Image (tube, rainbow, N blue to C red; front, side, top):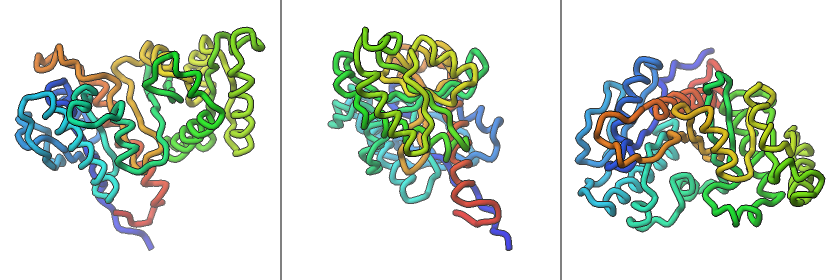
Length: 327
């Protein structure tokens, strides 16, 4: 007996800070998605006085409160849109969430102290831990590059105190599960980027590789996660781009982002792993200086929509095999 043919659930899309380029790149990206993936459906979450024409059919609308032109209001509607999107994902109305860029000062002005949307999503969804994975399925060197940031928005002086064996194990495990369940990679190959230059050269330049990485790697391997490392930063990313690894765990923000954006600017996608639903976003900010000028590039937002559609299908196929009906 075969199951009924299910209509794919839509993906919730926020337009971010209304003062930035989010609204225009979301619109342009959705137009491109309609041609590249005609079966993908979107559910827009926008301020009630939103004026941009959004691509439809297939694009439903949910509204939050109106934006009054101020920074506080921009932060408030950004927060409300994210909250509504999470509620829709948690109750199964949508299969995933794609978020356009927001302004952290606006979020703070509106009363939310989280560093950014990743941390907000963790809190709103109740996920015990999340990870920030930067994914480019196509780069300037053609090969994909996926980089998980073990620590994210921290001053560099604070990173060493946060890098622990437990953190590396938890973050690498989140990455492994995402690659297996959402990318459909049966046996993910993960590399751990070293913390110190030359992986410390046997302790000449620090002890994190021995004190933190070695026990973390032993625990991961005991759990069936075959991570390699620690591999120096000056070689690990080129080895990933050569196809040796499916993803790299970077110890801190800039060592990962410098390599990632060098080869993927415009095609990179921010994926939050560890959530009970798929979430992606473009790899750029609000770009207030060019908003409304018609020059903003929607490429990264398009890749965020396209990857979200792909990952939600992979996750749904895993949860509901062929012939099994699903909502």
